[in-house]
Image 1 (cartoon, rainbow, N blue to C red):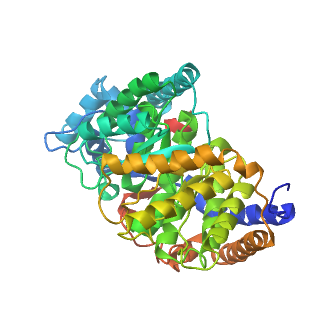
Image 2 (image 1 turned 120 degrees about the vertical axis):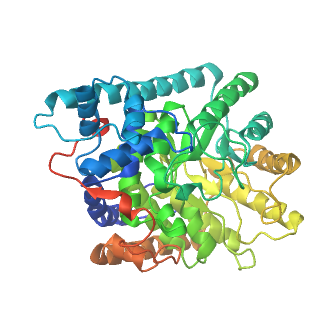
Length: 510
C-alpha cells in the first residue's frame, strides 16, 4: 500500500478481513429479520401518506393493523395488497384509514402471486421517484458545478423552526458552506413515527419530516443557482425510524444522511437488533438514491479518551465500511467519521491528531471522510476555541479530508448566532485558502507513522477479540464509547420480527 504512513498492505487487508468476519453474523441477523420501520418504509414507497387527526401517520396505523392480524414476519406488502384486492380499494392510504377504523381485516392469501405483482408495481413507482431524484441531482451538479476545493465545508443549522432554518441555511451557503446539515430536534430519534408536515417547534434542532426536507431542498436549489455551485443537504437516518428517514430522503433528494451502524445503540439505547436490521435497509435505500452516509465514530471520543480509544474508531470505521458495502454503497458514499478530540494539553496533541487523521485517510483512500471539530475540550474561552478550530482546519487540509464540519468557537456556550457562523467560516476559508494543497508537501516523520501503526495494531487486536466473542457481546461489554448495550434490551425490540418462510419485501426482492 503506497502512502505517507508506509502501512503494510497485508496488515490493512487483515484488518478488513477481521471486520468482515466480525460483521457477517450481524448481516445474517439483519437478513433474517424485519422491523415495523422497515415495513412502514415499504408502504411509504407504495404511496401511503398523511396522518390522522392526532398526528399519527397513516402508515403507522396500517402497519399496526396488519401486525395485529397476521404479525410482521410475512412482511406487510402481501397482506396489504391482498386486502386492497379483496375490498376493491385502489388507494393504499384509503386502506390505511379504513384499517385504522377497524373496517378492514388482513389475511395471507393461499396463492400470493398476483398480490405480489401488484405490490411490486406500487413499490416500484416509489423507487422510480427515488431514481428520478438521483438523476435530478446529477443534472443540477452538471449545471451549477461542484465546489472547487476539498474538503467540502459542512455547516449546521438548528433553530427548531424550518422557516427560520431556511434563511440561515441560505446565508451560510452564500458565505461558503458546501453542505448544510439540519440538526434534528432533541429526542426525535426515540419517536417511533415520523411527524407530518412543516414544523416550527423543535428543541435544539428541527423535526425531520418529509415536508421540511422538501422545503429546505427547494430553498437550497435556489441558492445553488445563485452561487453557481450545487449546495448539498444533510439530515438524519437514525433512531427508531431510520428506514423511513432514508426513504423520505431519497424521495426528496437529500444528498447526505447521518447513518451510523452503532450510534443509536450506544447513545440512544436503541436495541441492537432493531438498529442493525433498520440500518441495512436504510443503506440499501441510500445506495439506490446516491446518498452519501456520514457515520458517527466521532461520538466515541466524546465519552472515551481520544488517545486511549483511537483504535475503537478505526474498528468502527472498518465495520461501517463492511456493512455499507454489503448493503450496496460504493466507496464514494462512505463519509466515515472521525474527530479532533484529543485534549489540547496533552504533549504532541496536534501530531497525534495528524496521525489519527492520516491513518483514516490512507486506510480508506476513496471515501469522503467526515472530519469533526473539537467539542469535548472546548471551553467558554471563545478566542482559545477559535484557535483550536484553526488547528482542526489545518489538520483537515494536511491530511486530505473530504468533508470538514465547521467548528464553532461558541461550542458549549450558546447555540451559534449567524455572526458566530460567519467568523467560523472565515477561519475555515483562511486555512483552506492559505494551505491550498499543502498536503502534497506534508511528509510525516516517525512519530506520526509509529503512532498510526500502533493504532492499527490495536484495532486488529480488538477485531480479533470481537471475532471470538461476537460483535453483539462487544457492544454489550461497553467496547465502543464505554456504553454497555445488551442485545436483549433497549428501545424498539418489540418492533422486531423474524422472517417467516414466505416473507416478502418488494423494495429489495424485486
